[in-house]
Amino acid sequence: MYFGHGARSREFRSQPQTLVVESARADLFIGQNDPFMAKDFGTEDFDISADEVFSDVAVAGPSTVATYSITELVDEINGVLEDSFDEGFWVWGEISGLSTKNRHTYFTLVEQEPGSRSKKAQLNVNLWAGDMVKLRPVLSAAGLELADGLKVRLYGSLNFYGPFGKLSLIMRGIDPRFTLGDIALQRDELIRKLKLSGAYERNRLLDIALVPLRVGVVTSGSSAAWADFKNQISSSELGFQLTLLDVVVQGDQAVGAVTRAIETLGQRDDLDVIVVIRGGGSKSELSTFDDEKIALAIANSPLPVLTGIGHEIDTSVADEVAFERHKTPTACAVSLINRVKNFVTETETVWDAVARVATQKLSDSHKNVNNLT
Image (tube, rainbow, N blue to C red; front, top):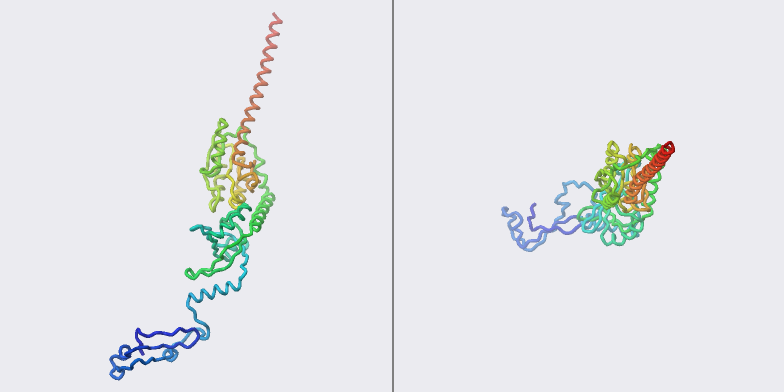
């Protein structure tokens, strides 16, 4: 039986479905071509059970459970989440895919499979701008900045966002001690590994040129570190020759770029020494130089590697394995200048001594000649 476009259904969830036909003239909707049916039924309502009309249609699923609209279901999910985590919760993982939009921060918190980089689980994280303002002093005090690869312990609550169908952690807190402890643990473990393999001391056992004027530099060409280093070298008025390999020194590409640059410069025969420098930054930014790949590139370099990474309180694994480490890029430049100046001074001292001896010999010989005459 056809009920036409005027049919309306009552709201239902678990109760039997009923169709209601409301019409001032039923002949507009029912059996217009049937003389028997073409009758004015007035304003009568017809309640017809859908179970009766579609009794021969099978239902795949239980008929006794609730039916929701999507919005109702989203509200129900968020209600359950709020009840289950009414005080919030802490969760730890590794930051991946961090981005910022309209002052809000978004990333994925990832748990890796043990011993591999495969993802075991992941959770979307939203850090609203207002919460970031509150957390920034906490991060700064610990020398941290949110970045990909950083392991963190976060506090927040869960929210299921209906328009995207997306479950996210709304981040409201962070435990810097967890991150600092993880950074220190990884660093100590790598140093232990390097010592056991013999790589820890390898670069320091090399001989450095008496006059290391030909210097390969690994840093960002647009950085203050490069400007400070270059200006200090230039002010010495010595005959330094600088070869810069411009690389990124933080972010996802930094480890690979710095490693390749060190290896490339190490293969050249027109250099005396390699310098790896960068300015200060947060612990998470400087963690690039705690990577095993960079440490091994320095350890295995056929040329001595000098470092000037960060500020005075920062010591990276790269510093640990370098031929010589310095607190800042400027201090690294000063060290090279002093080496050359010391050589010049020592050479001049030797020449002065030779000149004095020669002068004395000539004077003695002249006296002997005079005595003979």
